[in-house]
Length: 207
Image (tube, rainbow, N blue to C red; front, side, top):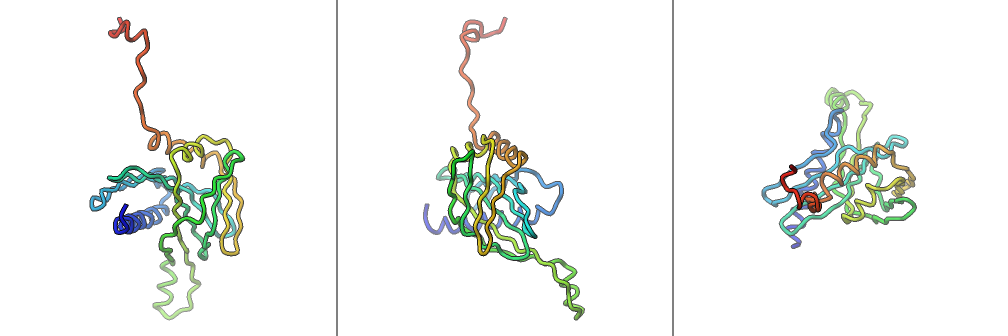
């Protein structure tokens, strides 16, 4: 894949990340979202709002993503972090049924800061605001189809995260794993028609 195309894809997925972040405010946000970019001929299918951890004032989401383009299909997982500051994630590891899957440092999209309207109104009126801002950042980690299936079929998954002055160990809930199972069964595993049985061959009409 050329450098220019890679940059365009990164920018397109960054736009999708922002879109997902905005929609995550809604209580009825869908579990899976799909977008198509005609300029890149790129289809992005991703899990949405799969909250895996909440500690102090931070919230973490871990979502599986399928990228379909002309050159083929790739898979990644997106780690989204929301909180009072940027986590500056340095290392992520998934412990899947006791087996360690090193995701590494990943690729960070541009972080964004969203402040509540009341703070901006206070500033416009010259009043000292009790500002409440949400720092949001997303990290992308390459993962294979087999690794996604291993994650979806696991009985126990622990997220290990190391960031700037932050160390987190978080066991994923059954709800988290069920979302991965649904995503993998519906969007990752190709549906194949089963071979006909000897009975069907001998009696194709079923009579």
